[in-house]
Length: 407
Image (cartoon, rainbow, N blue to C red; front, side):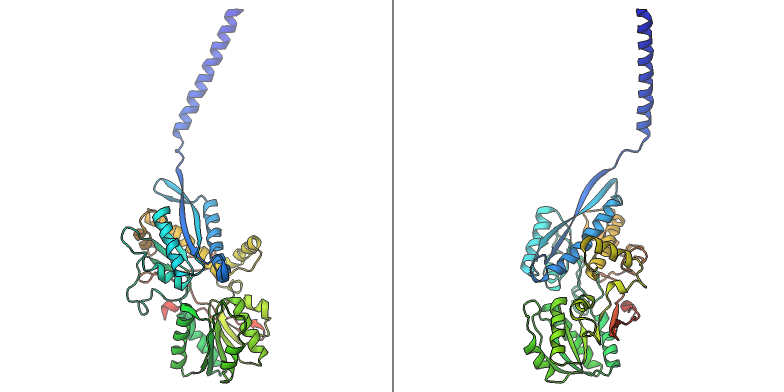
């Protein structure tokens, strides 16, 4: 009996060993799991103070893109899979703080790609981002044409911008205004580098189209709460239309106060201000005749995915989606494709060049909230149509998008 028990045990052990051999053979045939690492992308933006909402919209676009890309398995470069993370630093729109943020991220944290959403801080970063051995790619969210050869002859090679340049809107804004018979313009836009460049450029185009600038009284939209003095100065000149804009909330205040002072003309609203946000404050009646950028949720005819994206954003943030979030989300996805196309994560020159390869910078409005048509590689401008509207009879006019790069 004892010998029979021993024999059964030996046979059982032999079977176990055989199964282990086959199992180990199967494991050897499986592809080894790829290494997974984290690729950190920087953000220097106003995350507190007067511009916090603006910076928050940019960060939301990055966060939504990172979540989607990481959930889909990240990107693959060589034999390594990368998931993304964002390193966000507050600069309060102060150029010196943006420089400190960028220097810290590049030299101490090894970050070589930084998003930045304000013209004055981007300008400061453009003074250091091509430094040999310390290069970093600026992903710029600004409509100010900082890298356009007619504005800056020393084109920055480590630069990519997302929104249409504000010059893409100007001719359409003027055509709509003058189509209403508005010739006399009063100017009351925000101060600062962005407002001054917008104002100077618009003034030249307006005068060139035969318009007259009857008064100008810019104001700091970040600190002013009572625009009565500025409006009184401008309205005394009896303008047909007012050129206004800065952040949305103070822009709404300008409109309310202008209507309160009896102004019945139109408004030309620069692209920083969101007409749909303003409408929630002033109502559509006060916005009658306002010309500006089409609210993103009204762009679904051209960008069908915007509807789903807006719903996802509202579910996450309990607010209406903004162009800042939608464009940044799409820019980040293009960046991810450029890194994969370049086949490197530590050579920003190769990554920047990859934006112009194949269809890297082309996105479909069926898959993304914004349809980009490529990149103007010399200046790093992604090709997004300009989306203009005008409030007519209490609704957003459905106008054709401007393919500004074809003009």
